[in-house]
Length: 336
Ligand SMILES: Cc1cc2nc3c(=O)[nH]c(=O)nc-3n(C[C@H](O)[C@H](O)[C@H](O)COP(=O)(O)O)c2cc1C
Image 1 (tube, rainbow, N blue to C red):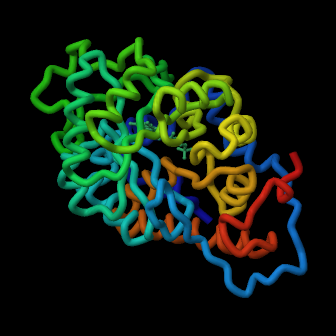
Image 2: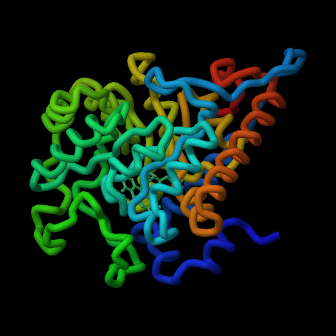
């Protein structure tokens, strides 16, 4: 049967498919990330009552129907004419939470109007005023957290090369009216602890640091004011050859030691992967590419369906492992 990715490949312009699919460098992390989840062998419990299994949980206090959230990804306008409005609608209908990229194709206020619960992702740009402005706008529009991406001091090279000129509906909304060649719009290579603290203060929102792969670095983020962390390789799109998120997760969970919620993304494709992440101590997972493929193939309905499918698969995996909820999982479920 044709996979969702194959169906998306058939409908997307080749350069857009390549942009979404790409990893950095030799693609080692991209290739390794899903395999790392598969490599973790499960140890199911038995003689447990799983007549009722729920996938519902909370993230930073916000109720969600599923521990599967939508990761921030740039330029949904390349996949679908409605861009992030369709993604927001699909995620809302699935009871999920949408992390809106700062590189979105649509104004965040419009996305907010279509969304259920949502967080705003931020890059700290060389011109910090632009990032600060997006943080304020997001707070005003009802975001319940900021996700500050900390693994992009600059964008890594990808074999796909630069995108051709973008259609009008795909351009990066937050930078509209500004000259894209202006280097003040690039990521700040000196992004530091003070940025997390400042963004937290000006927005009044909790801050989630996205892109940590080490326990000590997670603690540095918390010490800088972060309220949660996302274990992430940026989908294999930044430093190539890094430890896959599935392998890094236990170290981060141990270091954080209950001080903050820990989320994880990168190559999560099945309910079994979600179960492994929960068992290792993640509060929730995020997915990017499956949502982009679904958006390209079937718009908002596609996004809803792919998320509903992952949630149903997660419910099955929980029950078959002898767990009745995300909180009922533990490390005993995984042979490390
Ligand atoms: C096309 C694309 C664009 C992305 N854009 C962003 C972004 O704007 N901000 C960000 O923090 N992460 C971005 N990411 C990384 C994702 O948030 C996430 O960490 C990763 O892709 C998850 O892995 P998965 O695609 O295997 O599910 C992007 C990923 C892709 C594939």
